[in-house]
Image (cartoon, rainbow, N blue to C red; front, side, top):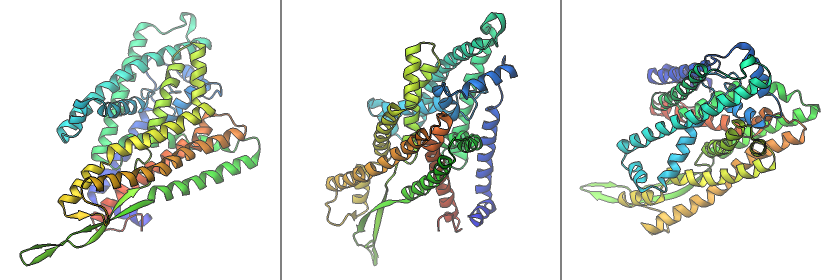
Length: 429
């Protein structure tokens, strides 16, 4: 692996992409500790104490995915979640609005239109969440007598905070797109990866503070076992054999070779986990942004416990099938095989081929989705059995490990392909 990294830095183009990606991530983490205008250090300390309170499960969950920026009331406090939520909504709308579906098939010009709508939607969600965040933090600070006799921010401070949070949301969206276009890996996934990794040292300390020491050892052993299982599942494939007919062009014979179509057991990678977490976070955000007792109770119920486990499992199953259907079209694949003179042995070309591929894809997606749900839920249950109720530690047990390993593997795969193109040995030998 060290040799592969050295080879990557020897290639000027790859070196620029890697350094560019690391620079954007460093800038992103810097924005996660720069507070918005009008916030003092005493206020930040009070908010940090509130975020670590076990009774604030919803806010602690959001604080994890923002990399601690929420508790710092930083300009990047909203994190990447508004952009992810907008992306989910746009992908769902493509399945129900014919115009959006037509744009998605127009190539680069259509994708630009969809991306522009996604950006505007992100700013709209950022505005709504910023207003709620300001109201929530006003209430939290007022409870601790941190706002003096006024018990609230003045309007100028509110406007400055609102503009800062919205500008931070737009800047995060821009940085994520820059990484995707000019760096290595998926920008959205890498920014979430950076947020979770930044909380890893604190989470590791909490793991050793469990009351019974054997639970701490069990948690660490389970975490390593999960990492091994994730890597195994991410590399697993179902290979469909394909045979190409021989063609005689002049005096040369083309085709007649056999190959295969590699179908991953987890074609959607870590996306179902991210999407499911975003959907579950939305009611948690509403609960955290309101002072209504029953809505807060619903938000905390969805943030943890059996209801969260069942809801997250069902959402992961749904998004695994949904996202796989978006990125993999059996009809187009069967049509391309027919045009190139390829066929699956024992299967008729055309509609029969597309039906066969769709059948195989549905069969292998189900165990992959079940695996994603199990990895996200089972460690969380283990943490609760240990008697530890810290939301940060529970998230480390399931979803966070899956996101970290999945994003790392996806990024390494991209580096692997770049090295192979330049005749270097990659990471996976």
